[in-house]
Image (tube, rainbow over all chains, first blue to last red; front, side):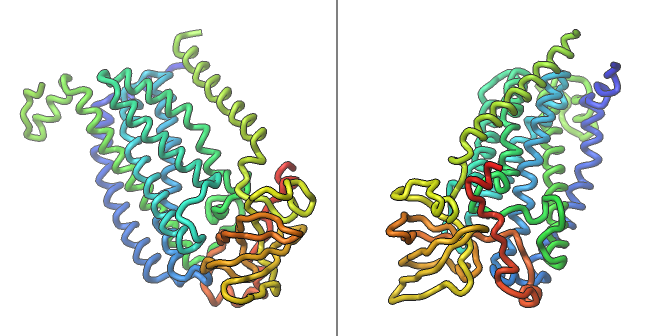
Length: 253
Length: 154
């Protein structure tokens, strides 16, 4: 099989330009969708019949949790590509995704705890969903720590890729924990087969919030991957040319 | 096989091995992954009588009796069996008849005596008007999330 097209896609200068064009769009659309989602979700949507206004945490909690799982999948796929094809770009995406994913995981855990105390009666319980999501946070932080432990970026990325791949087994566990076992955490409202168990006025802002969070996460990852590329390739001609175009000092070390 | 194909095979083998070992560990530890038992497990003596454990189910509609002070008695049911529960203490705001809860405590002469009660919210979100149009509290809440050990093994 011929893989040259795949390698060309991953050439650092062309990705750098591509990301530079795409990122502002993702960021702008993401902010617009977020503004709509928060206004519609926090102001327009009716209160829940049981939870009253406390249910509105779903407009932050559910997107954060969904993105935390998706980004782990992205990181693992990038890890696989980095291991098999030794693509620098995949290594950069892997390294760029970890802190973003860790932030969304922490946000999902924190918002869940804030909601859990008034609704369940406890901030934290060791049920399967909460525990596996905490493991997800540790995996992200582990990848970040492993990256920091190496001086040589390629060796670091290879170790991180391996950890990301090993941890991918946790992703289906997080998602299906509420179906496979008894848990205190409720089952999926939206991300499941069949009809969502949420009325349309509440669901539409939720979908907007999901879209916004994915767009903003994408923007953050593109920008981080750009930075990672620049710092790794700082001695190459295309970086020097890019920096000169931007009006910077071409004589970077 | 080229080097790249070898690496591809190694990654595939890693994922397959991890998936299989996770499957075996999780199915062996299924009982221990459960956050709570259900009334069926206790009624059918699948759990040691004097163990301290968590019991989950729906509060049967019409069974709630408030005693002196913070004492409450109610019946807790999964899809098959039910058990009387006694509790003294502060209940979570979501506690009501028809609601799913998880109680921690132990069996004493056929009654489950709880020292902690948590509300288990379900995945349904709706405005109050829609909730009123549904017929009963039972119609809104579902016993399916409370799986007895036998059900879970199926």
